[in-house]
Picture 1 (tube, rainbow, N blue to C red):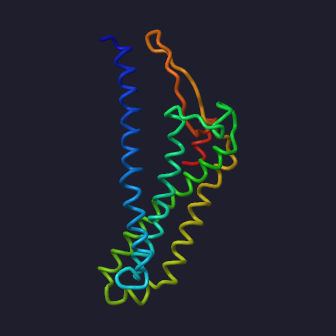
Picture 2 (picture 1 turned 90 degrees about the vertical axis):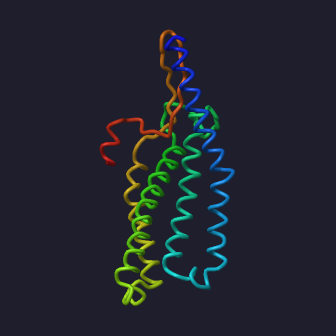
Picture 3 (picture 1 turned 60 degrees about the vertical axis):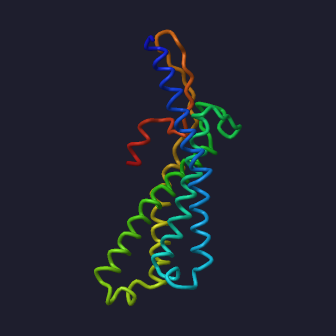
Length: 195
């Protein structure tokens, strides 16, 4: 087998693997996660679901599902699923700018809410005598709102940068391979501003 065929087979394998994992997540993981969030919501007035931990858990769950859906939309061009909102390729695209902004916003929120849930669990164990006095429902709502606004402000610069779905081809041992990726920043120097 020559190296061109090996490269093409590897590309096909990776694409197939990502589609399989995504299909599994769509069919199994997401519905289970939504079911758990639904149960937490329905039982939110009874113990233990009325605790601050489950308030943060529900917020994190909604952000997780949103992130998953946003990344699914981001993967579609890679799989050569071509919707009109992804076009024109290699040109600034406001839809992609908004999608990229949302990916950055909810990605940062996911990270920060995970830290908040860890701090909440740590505080409930280490400061168990005073935990309920200080970690109130009001404090939790303020913390979640603050983290969402902070995450949004971190992602805001994305709205001022050109984003697009990029299409390019590469030639490997005489075989041309078409690649589609995005959304991506059109100017690679733009990423330095956001890091």
